[in-house]
Amino acid sequence: MKRAGLWSIVGVFMSVGPLAVGQGYAKEGDARCTLATLNGQYLFAETVTLLPPAFGVKAPSVAASAGYHIFNGDGTGTDFVTFTVNGIDQNVPSPLAITYTLNPDCTGTYSVQNGPNFDIFVAVDGSALSHIDTSPGVSASGVDRRVGSKAE
Image (tube, rainbow, N blue to C red; front, side, top):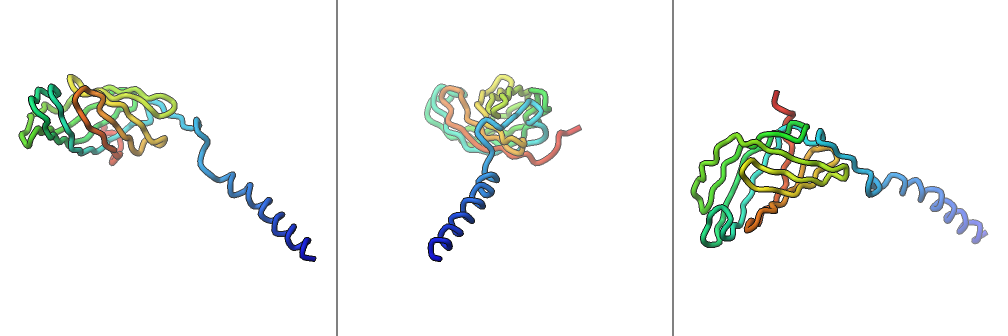
């Protein structure tokens, strides 16, 4: 009888186990992004370290930026931004044109008109993106979250 009870327990675990595993995370490679994945308004704010000669600094400096992106869902958009270096407003003219690429695996690039370039990593549903500045002498990264639908 002890054997029958043990095999019953093993049988239950074996039959329930595949059900639990079947509802796990999506397989790697299931992510599918298109340019339309990024669509709407995304807020950002970050502190940045600048090393010479980035942005014309002559010594290591601290910069900060805040604003929002409007992604149009077609590889283009607009940035509205305030940018300071060592606490001094740099009077960045807003809005700025942006362009971006997005691969099916949700990785891509983002560029600001006459400005920095970023590698981006986008949530499959487009709700957020993380970025890292690839410009020489700039140490900046952050997460931007969608807060609204595309402005009409």
